Image (cartoon, rainbow, N blue to C red):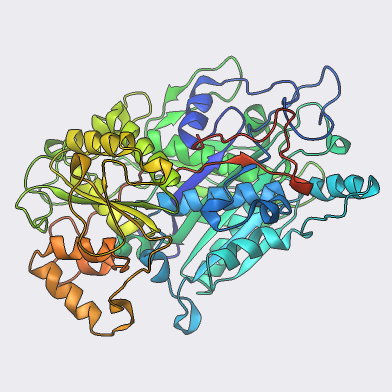
Length: 575
């Protein structure tokens, strides 16, 4: 595959009507499911629809996990729910890409500035300002941050990004125009990677209409050559993008248009383009054509062939032609077909079937001869327990353990799970570490850890520590809560020689010492260690996508109101 001037989708996430995640979105696409309903119950304020009207709505539009992002409930209540949803979804996309923590730091923009990630978001509605204006007329004195700029700007500020941040409003084409701008910024070298997406919520009855839709979605983009060099998992390839007026003459094949997308997410304004692009990526990934009309059924999608009969990658076009304006946008996508590696019969360059349960030698740097070092972290004990539960449930399902025949998801190996968690995730304040010899043991250890009661704020039966001497607790899990104790008590993070020291420990298989240092609060660049001169055989494999960290979302609204008639309630991990 010619990688020049092509761009890789290395991370993807979204929430759409009756689909809290992309797995559910794909099921809806395959089944041609009607996602319309009456006005959602429990929404704050007046109903967004008139009697008898139907629309396509998200669940929990007022919900947000303020703690995860270090915000107070009052501050979060003043942020447009569209912005909050986009923030959560971008984080999920970045985790899907394995692009948080030190891997995000390694994205350098012009001048070598770290975290060179651009942000481009399509957003056109401003319902929360209307809600606030009505509250002001009734005596309320709080107004949300206004301006679409903050949807991109706040995300950039919270994550400490140095790339460009831009909001786009071109009505229905907004999200695809955002993708087009992101590709342009990458091509010009303004950032090393970019997030592009869109969001739309219906929060005020003035915009109520039959068939109204909602959604939020984001993709993480990199130049294809860099994505392959960085060992990223590539969901699809962006061959070209276009924005403006005029007709499009692209390749034949799958076309995800505004019309087909409207069946799935309704008249969804600014999010229409990213919903279409996501549907195209999923069909490319699974090699299945979703039904385009209600009476159709999903069908296998054979690859095209050239004149000699050789298979070619599948291609698709996501396009939005504006219904309320002249601005059109297009993205031409191509299936990513990895090059076959010597000795790899699967052709995926990733997960060998004979290691699907992870038994065997592991990476060779496990410090015990067998087993893999598993690291997991979160901002609070509750988040840690919810994330551990989510990962255990996913690994125990067909999707994690033996592949999913419905979706075509590949099986995962323990070594791949371990490396993705170490290399691709940010280290947060509440941390656990364990050695697992197979996926069964990992699932059991995670579940025993959760049952030990860490979510109550203590370590329960698991071993808790604020220092470097953690013992092994229930399920072989070691636990550290660094929220109140000082992190990195030895101050090694400020010493330039620490990198060489950590590298020497890694080369000598001193995983026990590395684990203790990580639990003490020292942030270790595992990606640098594992790609060094003594890297194991798995260092050049693409990172596998894993379930994202769990959010503990609760309803937040202007004036401290919870946004529901029943009252504020902890809703647990998001779907």
